[in-house]
Length: 48
Image 1 (cartoon, one colour):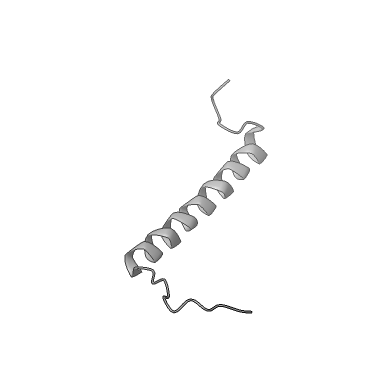
Image 2 (cartoon, helix red, strand yellow):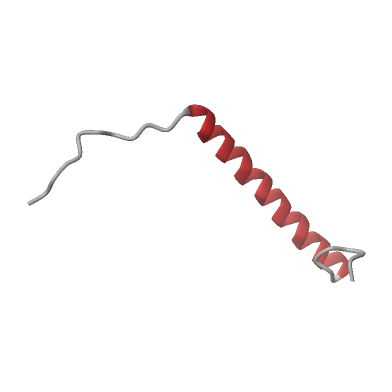
C-alpha cells in the first residue's frame, strides 16, 4: 500500500539563492586551495 503526502514542501527563493551562492564560493575556495598546494606545496602558504 502506497501512501501519498498531500502537503508539499516549498523552498523559499531567498534560501535557494543563498545556498547556490554558498556552493559557488565553496568551489572557488576549493580551486584556490588546490592552486596554492600545486604552486607552493602547502595548503596555507606561509603557515608552518
